[in-house]
Image 1: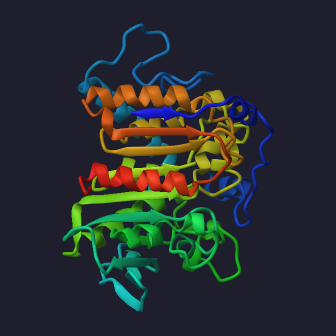
Image 2 (image 1 turned 180 degrees about the vertical axis):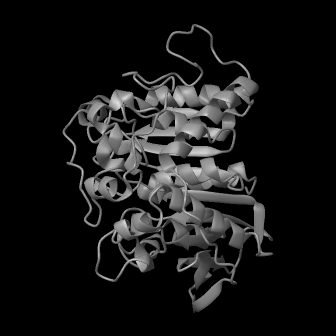
Length: 387
């Protein structure tokens, strides 16, 4: 199911100039290429070389045939994931720290407890997180949301309502509603960078250790370790683990879900536009440290071997709610999401799961307002039969 809220004023706003993309200090693509000596990936895909988006239920621009079975879609999905795997890269002989999660401290709030954790991750790089345990959970064991922060140096603290924008305090709001929440710092944020530094600090140190990997790959790997931890807790319903985020947290939620089958539900707010309509597709490779290999395609973006509609479609048939705005100043040119929502609906329909996809495209800029969040919270409860 999807819904579009369009108006003349919204359409005018959709075509206004956006705020220029911001390059974070701590990473340069040229330095990455020099240090890693990585060549351009050799990826010949149906999307590569096409200025237009390849429809999700097509296997090439030339064919008139349409994918009509889950078997055919999953064959295409496998090809998409293989392509993304090459772009993400792989770690160098990663060593997993197998020690137990360490409790750093605990605070009691009115409706929940906030527990400061260090979750074992890569050796020498544990994952700082807050675990929010409601005094009155919705169920026992409880549905649990992984809450991913936006691009702000404090990381998880903003998601918990401790600093920053109250509209970003999803974990605080969800915990007050009775959801268990776990809120990790992504690599390059929060406790994983020195106090006072900017996001992506120390990026080149990461690439020195893992020259063939990517920040995005590491983020996915870390989320899998967070899920490992949740599976050790008897108070967590492991069949109802979801993920939610805005901006950095949104595309992090999408990618984490695509790569982690134990995540059963996803909410993404203002997390992507398509590479082929983006005036700054270098946001993924030059302006951030996320996916350096995308940098080989930004001078002629139609050569990119994938696009974001394909990645998002790989979530099907798990429940997915996408919130997007027509005048997003971070991810501009989102008006084509109306058609993408229709295509996603069709992918979900192959599984007979149309009701599990919900897309919103609304007037406004890069934000997730209270009315949107309340809609999402009600949707989560409905998907998990908590009403």
